[in-house]
Length: 395
Image (tube, rainbow, N blue to C red; front, side, top):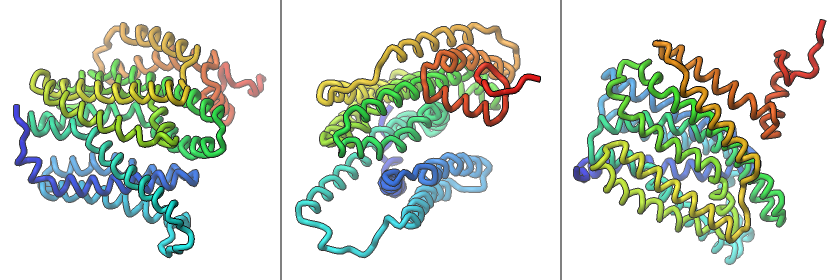
């Protein structure tokens, strides 16, 4: 297998355009989160992509769009996201085109320029590090295999959706705590976020992995999609590890050691490219997933060790071990269930078992006060009777 340079060069313009839109969309999304605004920016930066991309793929599959039109439309999605974020940031009154030179001292301008350059390099590095596997699968195998790989990647990406939301909410709080020198508050956010993300990540991952074959059987392309099963596993494991210790990346980013993230990110990009070149020829798309999983896990572990040694912070507690124990019991209970012959029925039964054996004990033993609070409030508001609904009347 060789890297298809011609394919890459022919699409370089689209790659650069999409990269530009993603970089500046990320900057605007982070800017909005500084003012406590998360939901609307998420719609433009993520939801537009997640809805638009499947629509474009279907239109291309049905022949409504040619391949060239698909590429232009894909770049157009990024442009729409960027415009939406620009509009929203402007509606907050936080974008000012009028510049008053008196506001910016030479020292402040130097600091702003340095941080802006770091932000751009980090965004480009992240784009290279986290998207290179898909590009290399298409170039070293074929576009069809890349389609299977991206479907499995899309499934695995569902695991980290809670992380994106919690990180966006936590960023301004951590930044303010650093400014105030409130180390205890940062530690509290770190530990609570890690515990809640471990619970959410394990729950989604176990559900995906146990039901992955049934999910593929629902489609008419089971024989082709089943090749992506191990991709879901390896990428899913990497996502869960990132959920547990990934907040350290945000903490480093907002500390005075923020430049370290760029170094570790460049190491991630380099290792990912090297591992893909080594593993794709041997294991195909599973090799690409293994390479990405190893690189991302290594990146998170390096940053975790930096946070532990330099900042003296770590997120683990006894609750972490309890969650892992409940997950092991729950996975065993759902995995050994007999097959019913119906993919949809299998998914429903296995999902119900996971909820009862994993989510149930987590809430009952109040492993996470945040999750317990959210669920009990939901049950009270919906008037659903149950062991956590203490205010219901018995007639």
